[in-house]
Each structure stands twice: as structure tokens, then as C-alpha cells.
Image (cartoon, rainbow, N blue to C red; front, side, top):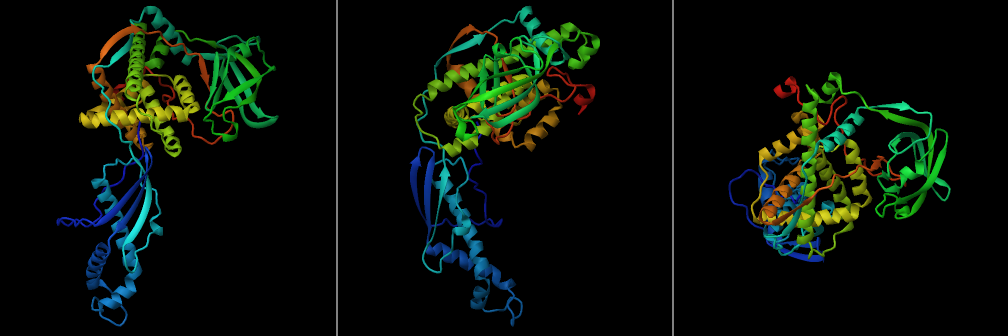
Length: 500
């Protein structure tokens, strides 16, 4: 999982080649939790005076003071006129060099920038300069024994029946919804007005939402089980009511973990008509020349999804074993901030593996409903895997990014260059880097493990996901996952795109 930007250690001085003189620092570090440190820094008077002398010596030839020629004013007058500017300048230099030196000399590994207000720090007329800050760090722990683990790996040889079932799902994505003057059944579509209330007061609503009747209806902050039973036999013009259970991590803190009233006004019932597999449809699905070529692409997609589940299952087992002793508590602020990054990482992984936007929304909603718990688990996994990667010198290479971006582009029917630009624009390269490092580390651990193969059962897509909150809230939507309009998740590159 990606953490926040690490403590910057850039050179604050000029491009001079002389070796920088180390500061004489008194650094006290107070451990407040496994990941939280309070740092108090005292900079010696000698360092302050040295920096002041350097600054004024550099300024003297350029200083302009009324009544004196350019660069000819006495130093005391220059110091008096430019004291504030010079103090602010050396304050910034001393703080930056102090942070750099602390980063080099202390054993802690920062995972966030220091939390402090530089404007509250002053350069004293006499005596040392003091400042303090809070910072989040990677917890300290012994690397667990990761060699020779006992693991299970799900396997399956996909049959023609598996391909038939997936082909039906693919065609459904390009099907046509037609009005139906009758009672709804499982698998049908409903156009609904949704309203959610607490003690009779409406807290959120969604108008004219098209929802498929499936066993579970999922929102960002909760879900309704047995939704297919609730809607069985419903007709246009009717209203159905039930209770919706909100998650413990719902954005609306006042309603976390509670049940609210859900009301569904049915505007229309629709049936899905699957398109015929004509040459035009084959072209629309990805420029396929035959049904056989499409079926081969579908089978490849099933294999990639299996690889995703294999990686997830192996990762879960590895991380369960490696984090058994990771009992440290993580700060709520860190979990809240990192929950979005974990969602971003998951969406990248799902896109890479060829999941549809409906499936990604369902996964995303589940993650958001349990954000604190899932983020805590993922962060602990990240810390352990990151430490193993450092010890084993596992690195990310340029070709790793090319591979990941090409796979994402292939699944979404987009050009790799455009996908890279989107990832960079949204600031997700760090999440992609962590994904690459963690996958390589998992592969290393797996290479030493004793693996037992077990049958893999294809997951039934029984959750319908709505990208909104039942209980209200201002959290961000799930990152965009869908293909470009008119393109398929199986789309092949055109000659023009290949040329790009």
C-alpha cells in the first residue's frame, strides 16, 4: 500500500562543492505509539551565529543602505536593516538542515512529513533555537521468518461451460434494456427512486437509478442483504421498504453501525435483451474476426482473474502468517489518510486483472464499508513486505511500470500512453510502485514456500453496487474504472493505436 511522501532530504544550500558542516543538535524523541513520534530539536547558538555570519557576509557586497554607496554600509547598519529577512532565511535553512540530519542519523523511517508550524519558530537574540514536531514513522519490528511457509494455491482448468457463462456476461454489458409490463424477477433491472430516512427524516436520496435485482445491494457505506427477495414480484408504481445496515466506518459518524429505513419507489421494470453475436458485435467487442477468437480472449480473461485470486489468496496467507506478531496500533489519522490510497491500489490491481466496472464498484464499496479495518491490515502487510523488500534489495524497474500499464490498458481498451498519463495526473505512480514491489516480494516468498493446490470455485457476481452513500457523507467516489465509451474490456489495439 502507498504511504504519504517521505521526509524530504534535498540539499538546501547552493551548489557549492565544499562539504556541509554538520549542525550540533540535541534531539529528543518521544515514542507516543508504534507509528507516532514527538521530536524536540535544539540547535546550538554556535550554529546560529555561524549561519548569521555566512548570510551577512554574503549580503554585504550587495546591501543597499540609505546614505551609503552600494555595498559600502557598515555591517552593524546592514544587520539592523535586514535582521528580519536574514533571520527568516537562516531559520528556514536551520530547520531544513536539521530535518535532513535527523533523517540521516536517526533509526526511524518517516512515512509522513513533519507536522509542525515553521512560522511559530523564532531565531532568538541569544541562546539556542528550539522547535518540535510530530511525525509518523514505520514501526520497528523484527523481520518475521518468511522462508518455507505452507501455502494453498487455488487452481482450475476452465471449461467451455465456463467460457459460455462468461460470454453471456460480456454480451450483457452490451445488451439492451427494454421495458417490461409485469412483475420483476431476479436478474431484471429496476429504475428506482431511492430514499433513506432516520427517524422519519430523509438523510439521502438517489433519483432514477437503474439497479439490477441481485441478492445484495451495496452502497459505499452499507448494504442490504436479500435484495432479490425484497424486490421479487414488484411492478412499476409500487414501493418496497426495508432496513439498511450502515458500516462501522460510514462517513456519517452519527449513524455508524446503525440501521436506517430504505424506501424504493419502482418507476420501471426492464428486461435485458442480449445482442446476437454478429460480425458488427464482434467488432464492437474488440475487433474480433470470429467467435472463436472472442472465446479465446474470454478464456484469457478468466485466466487473468484466476491469477488475481491466486495472488490474493497467497497474499492473504502470507500476510496472515507474517503479521501474527504485528500487534501495534495504528493512529486513526494515518488510517483515514491511507484508506484512499488502499482503494486506489485495489482499483489498479482490479483493472490490471480485467474486472468490469460493476465488479470494481462492488469491491470498492466493500473496502469502503470496512475502511479502518482493511486499511490497518493492508498497512501492516505493507510495512512487513517493505522491510523484506529492503533486506532482499527488491527494486522497481522501468520495465515493471511498462508491464503494469500495458496490462491495465489492454483490459480497459485504452492506449498505454494515455493510461500512463491518467495515472500520473491522479498521482497514482506511488501506488503503482508499491504494487510492483509488493508483488515481487510476494513472488519471492512464494518461491520458497511449500504450495498445495486446491480447487478454485468461480465467484458468483451476486452484488449490485451503487456509487453513493445511503447515510450521507462527503467521501470521494470510487476511482474511475470503466473503459472508454464504445470500447470493451477485451478490446484489441487498432493499427493506429499500435503505431502510437
